[in-house]
Image (cartoon, rainbow, N blue to C red; front, side, top):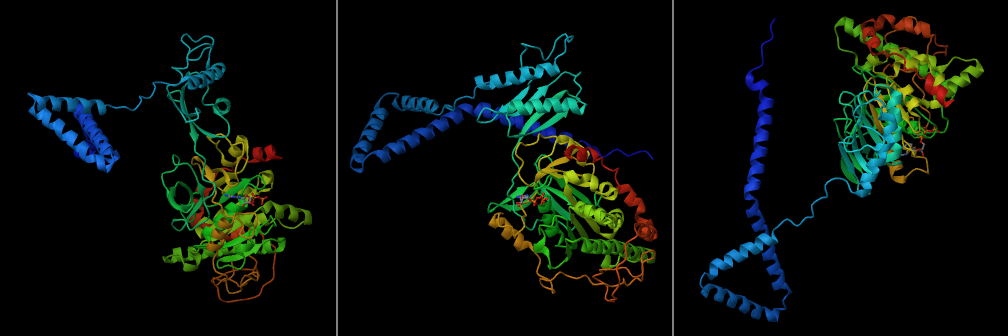
Amino acid sequence: MARRPLPRILSDRGAHLARGRELARTAADSATDILHPLITIARGLRRLASAGRRRVADTPKDRRGALLFLVASVLMVVLLLPYGPLLATVSLMAAAAWQGRDRAPTAPEGPDESQTRRLKSLYDALVPYFSSAGAPDPLYAHGGSWEKAFPAYEFDGTGRITHLVIAYPAYYTDGEAESRARIEHLLAAKSGRGREYRFAWDEEGNQLTVRVLAPLPADIAAQRFVTSPGETVLGFTDPAQVRRTLPVVHGGERRDVPPVVWRTGIRSTEPHLLAVGQPGSGTSTLLRSVALQALRHGDVVIVDGGGTGEYACLTGRDGVLAVECEPAGVVESLRWAAHETERRLIAANRAHRAGDPPPEDTKRPLWILLDRPSAFTHLAAADGREDPQSLLQVPLRHGRPANVTVVVADQLDSLEALSDAVRQHTRARVVLGPATPEQVTAVLGAPPHTTPLDDVPAGRGYARLGTGPVHRLQVPATPNPYDDTAGAGHRQAVLDLLPARSAQDGARREPERTVPEAGPVRGAPADTVFMDKHSTEKEPVEKKPADPAATDETVAEAHAAHSADADKAAPEPVPMEAAAAESS
Ligand SMILES: Nc1ncnc2c1ncn2[C@@H]1O[C@H](COP(=O)(O)OP(=O)(O)OP(=O)(O)O)[C@@H](O)[C@H]1O
């Protein structure tokens, strides 16, 4: 069917608007030109009047009468003189025009001496990279001029470059990562260290734009962010990178800041997250921040491989199903999480087949947060026990339609200990703390477009959601409230966000051990441990090792409806071996 053209009024609307705006601007410019003398005289009259008022105010009260008499006499004489009023008016206008002239010193055209020196030195530094022996009219040549090479530039108050556009020859290999990195490294070094630069390569126009980035606010405390269910604020980024802003309280004031928001749940294309960093880079803090946000609408199971009590504040709180720090408990909780994922899938699938909406007990988000699971992998390998990570296969692979989200945080040098399932299904990625561009690229699958800082504050790094852009990231300050070294204000903010203590106050909350209402899960051991919050029928059971193959088989049928989606969301495994090799 031929497509009908849009009505002219709709299709031409943009052009009309643009033309209208252009006309209005031209009319305003012409009016300003015509009225310029009048504006100057009016400004001068105002200045003369205020000078007169000041003079009267400065005159002592007892002499004001004499001054008034003098002015009145002068006026009288002027009125009596032939052509006096006319001459007086002309003189007044001339005086006003003189007083009203624009006295602001005109900004000097072009850069000053020190700025010129900086631009020249940058140009000279770029010559070896951008010059070519055979070029007839080279843009870059020894002794050449920088004016054509740098079409736009800006400096800050201290004379350092804040914005620079660099034209480069078309033959430069700007499509190659190493070629870009060489130039970026050089520009960052020559333009002043200690600042972060953003580089935008315009391959079509052969122009590189360098911009100095303002530091990200590192002291925004944890708080109740204005987000919808299913949205988690990972941290804050640059305004140029995201369209949305989030109102936050920062330093006692309300501000709008651009956030990095991660969407989870049934429609998410990045349903699970992996955060990595050097020790002390802030990955546990990120996990705590995610946990506090997750607890607003869901339940969390926490696996703490750090063993430093980073999540002790969450123990026994409403919605916190378990905080596990010893291997047996970890295996038990993860096995439960795998079966809970299956139970939800089967229940939802039955409802789909019956034409009913998904049952209520499959909708509440379940979060599995693992801090340094590699620690348990090493322990299990040493003791010849099963790797707890193998139990993550089901939640990772089938968690999305079951509202189950997995977040894994680990150290850069333990990447090789992460299972294939973790690498393959965590499409939301975060790198925190000091990391080489190669490490960042290996984890995120794309290089950062900004230079790394020499001194990286805790909680600073990069985030990438799926195949989206790489964002600079600052995680909100969410310290362990029991850590005396953290700021009191930030600790209190975390305490304020903690859910109420649940009924079994203080004690480790033992999961309810029940078989699901839907009956034994096919393929799963009949006497498996379940922690089904929503089931009422309790039946103590024995622990049995999970059989990942069996569990995968179990969900195969229930998952048939979702598998196409899951496979669509399942990414190519991001090659992290390079990062692991780099750090080991
Ligand atoms: N976003 C942040 N803002 C302010 N301080 C932070 C932030 N993230 C972390 N910190 C501080 O940095 C220190 C280390 O943080 P954290 O324990 O989260 O790091 P980690 O990567 O988990 O390290 P480790 O693996 O050694 O435990 C803590 O004192 C913490 O309060």
